[in-house]
Image (cartoon, rainbow, N blue to C red; front, side, top):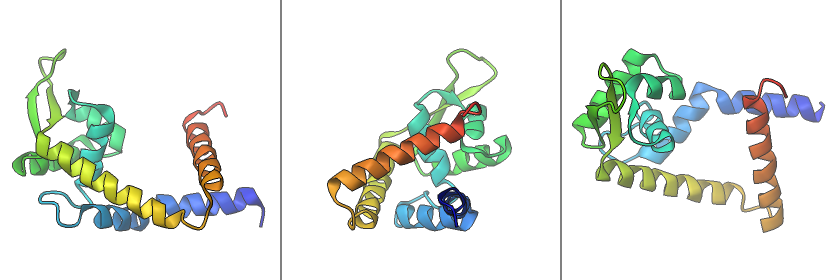
Length: 147
């Protein structure tokens, strides 16, 4: 099997819902209001930054607006984010992380870092750094339709 086919197969498995759900479940265990379905919304907001609309957030994490809105409701009910008037669109509502939301993001990122450290433990530091560099390049290449 060619390296390209091996990469395509591995990428396909990485993007499968059960792979993502399993990872998200492992990261969110024991955090009130956060589970495999709400995690992408909270994590997406942390990446995008406070003040995005629910519509922008939904598009960024690949959810229908109504689904993202339900997850925002859940996260808000658990004190992990809040809604406020959008800064530039009077018809829209912006979402922002609360202190508890930021703490939840920090906790899940810490868990992810620890998991990746275990997964990369068979590589020396230079190999792990090279892998990260190659992975970053692959992600950027997939985002750029011209490549």
